[in-house]
Length: 311
Image 1 (cartoon, rainbow, N blue to C red):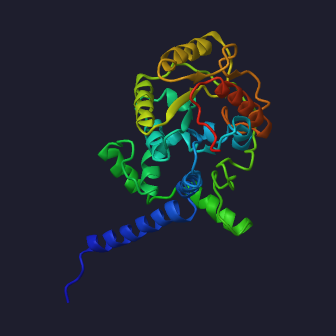
Image 2 (image 1 turned 180 degrees about the vertical axis):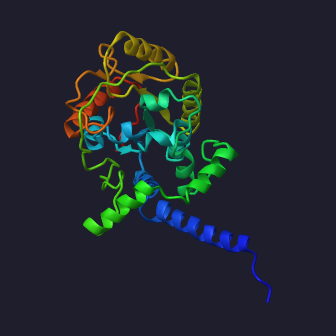
């Protein structure tokens, strides 16, 4: 009887281990699973709307920023929150929501500075996210990066495994950062607690040339589908020092020619107090989301060509 080569045995073991890692990360309880589940739930909610709507998108700075029901009441239009996760990257976030744009829709893009300053539009979760939702390479992820991401998708982090083990022991179920139940408008239903002391963010650069080009391209794609693009500076907890203010003003100058840009001209949407914020410099508590949405509603009402209610 011919003895099986050792490398085949090791290959079989490695394949089984990698497969188990994929099951955990994508289908069981890894953060990629929760991100995928949140995205798919939001898309399903968007597909239930059969009239012109306001689509809000961006990273978690959009997801944890607005009160869609309040916006909908103020505007008299359906609103769907398609904010995802900043590390997915601008180049992947934008095409992931494009298919939901229908004639008459308005797309409100609220990109946090993590996205605006990025030089290539891709983040740590670009590849894993595109693979998990069944659209590998979404956003033109380079083949080398996608191959590496595919490999890493089958390698759970030690931190993730420990957390999942503790979840099972303490609560009997797996949890994740994006496991919040969503409203019918795609909003989160829980505030993320802030832990420890805070410091104001510094914005050390203006929007990157890549982000400007990508947002211009997205505008063209939205308009080709019969929609219109509106941009907004994010609310951010930051120190309004000369460097930060100068870089935000440069960002305004670069984005304003692309599409209507919503922001407070006095504050530039820089919030010097953390009182309304949750666990990051962009995520808002419930009261912050209410105030932010009231501001957006007033700003949006001044724009022409907003989608009209269906009689």
